[in-house]
Image (cartoon, rainbow, N blue to C red; front, side):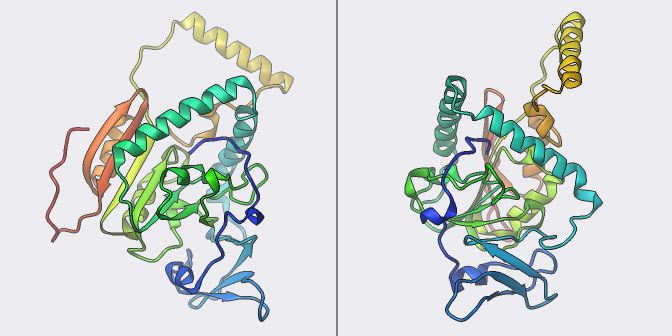
Length: 308
């Protein structure tokens, strides 16, 4: 979820060291093989090695880098996505900059998050995964759960782990299209303002379903496209001219829209989730859609869908 890029470093005790139980939950994002820790005797784990393909993934300040290409070349198919991520980092830096406007924006985000968690009713027990966690600030809303946060920008400048009331957590650097977690690892999963930044939103939902336990809860919060009439042509032309001038002068800051791979409509988001899980409930608050969905296998009793 977009939020203030400030925060504390992992050394502040907010990142919980990986235990053997944690390692059993992790898998290689390339081949799905089991991972084992590597490091000098008596030292903390500094790498994870796959028992299947022998891929080696570094662990820095307690955060394993389990991006599929960690330690290698990401490949040309990820280049456009990585460019958008760089714009996202710049947009966050310029937007959450401590100004009164940024503080007002943060208050709006906090109210929206409070409304969201009240609606989705995350179970009070079990492990929870947030896909696209940013700085991990939303874990403050699920304080009694074993929280895992996954994000491709963890460890980058401006992406420090946020305090969130001192709630400790486990963090993994990775991508939602290839979650480095074993099947059925979590009771709950969060996807908050992430799908519009994804290369393959459908694959992220598929992966979220895979790592949920039967009857596990997927909670989605996503800005959606509302069908509004276009402004007059003269207004659009004036905005475009101003944008061109700023680009030519080098003063153009990235817009929120420049950071996204796509913008989903309400119907697209409802179909994306509903084709893969049982949607229990959904509402739209302004231009943001909340959804609560369950992983239910064919043999399990199905919960009737509500209108979304």
